[in-house]
Image 1 (cartoon, one colour):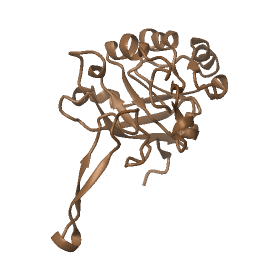
Image 2 (cartoon, rainbow, N blue to C red; image 1 turned 90 degrees about the horizontal axis):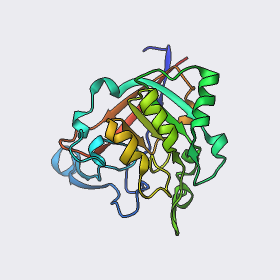
Image 3 (tube, rainbow, N blue to C red; image 1 turned 90 degrees about the vertical axis):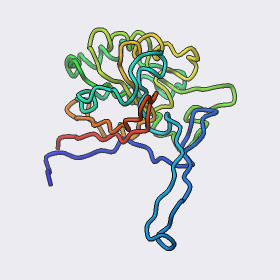
Length: 232
């Protein structure tokens, strides 16, 4: 076993208790055969494509763009850049990653390499056990996300292949017109990961992230096992 790195699981458990976007069905499983009766055990699993820790493919918001089974394989194993904006967001459910935070990160850690995956820690991974605090509130959705200006910089100037974060959505919950989804990332074939966890266990640089997305034919997205390899 290679002991030069630690594997960090960035994936939430997937089941009936998974926190879903309002109106989307939670994962369900029906037992079809059992060891006692049939000699083996198997279930039929019903999954919304955007369940739990999942990937958004470009076609999710841009008609005619790439489906999840067509994502470039090279991009699914990429250097991970972890930007911890939890201090700047400071618990603000309508906060966003600002360009100033990205530039401050680069001042400290160096230029973000092309073809990286940006993993944004907002601090919301700590609230997952409380769906209301995680973002589903009576007056609408409230959780932090990527700001438009920061996203444009990452896509256009730093040529990232993907972005992800520890909330229900890439755009802030209050951004109901989904400006980043619609106008910045997916039109440029930059995919998303939503509902990440354990980002606090990643260093700012040096990790490699593996995106274990299901190649669902014509899929708009898919649940995925997200693993990070962190050098010791």
